[in-house]
Image 1 (cartoon, each protein chain N blue to C red):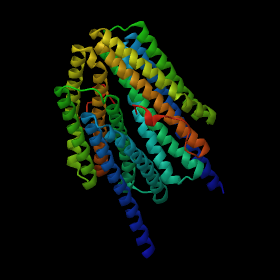
Image 2: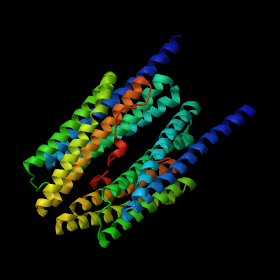
Image 3: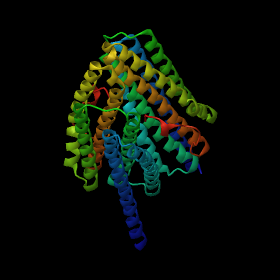
Length: 232
Length: 232
């Protein structure tokens, strides 16, 4: 009996350690996004390079979590809730890795357009979509940490908001380009940044769907109009 | 003994079935990319809608492969080469799903810009980068099918070529926008299409790295200048 007891405890420890790694990775991905946007808006090149460097740790954590999860599946052959925990860790780590990547790309564009200035209206638009996306990332990490299904559903429900802001920012940047060809290079970079931020929101929604599955054991089947949108 | 024999055979069957599903998924993802570009260049809206529809099957295959692989790990507790096979299937299915998504997005943009015409030079540029990316996808699927490590390495080595063509196409589209503001909307969509195609090449390279790991048991450590590029 002590052996069994030990094994059970150790399995739980494995799962807890996996969840802690996800929390660590999530915190780092969130910071990368937040700092990349700050680097972009303030033309802070030093910070941009720090962000690019910090993403490497997120990539390393991704591989570590994937390996740990596979080891758990092979060793413990988890069932039901435990198996969901492990699969969820693999999926969430995958989305967090992509969020980190998208933040890194924003940081690279911050370096590329460091000498450009942008209008206040564009700045406000970028700030707005960034706040929405960051709020989604924070909220979904909370939902995962405390297993809050209602919070996960909120994240799923609010993705449309980011898409709408993206569409309006897209149009604004296009208008700005048409007004003056000298804006074209900078606006093109900002278009890609806006797209990256919108996609960070998509990945937050993916994670929310995984959290929903983790808690309920069912696939999320709520509103998400991804099939009609031009993006990933 | 017959029992053991049976078990061994059945395990091999599991792995073979997984590899067949990957081949099926790969063929479909490749077709989506090829047809999405055809739809874009020929303003073929019917084809574009078919592509958008066809991507759903790729998504379904992704989930199926992921589930089958996890079941194999839990049931068989594979070691060494067998474990690599299973992990490789999960990773490759993930990249193929994203290739399908990127193709779907090109198809959506084909619908969005159906009434626009583009210059011959831009058309040639899009055709060129598309051919390179498709060749990479085909080659890496071959490398996986016949476990050809040299072919996988070739794919890794040639990613830079796509990046260079992308950079030149990016500049061309920018120039085209600056020449005439009426080109801006169409060129912006084409910029995103070019970016999607370039990223399809990136995912082909990811798969090549996985094939390298699958065959050799080691992580690919060759040239790939992803840390200096603005993309994912």
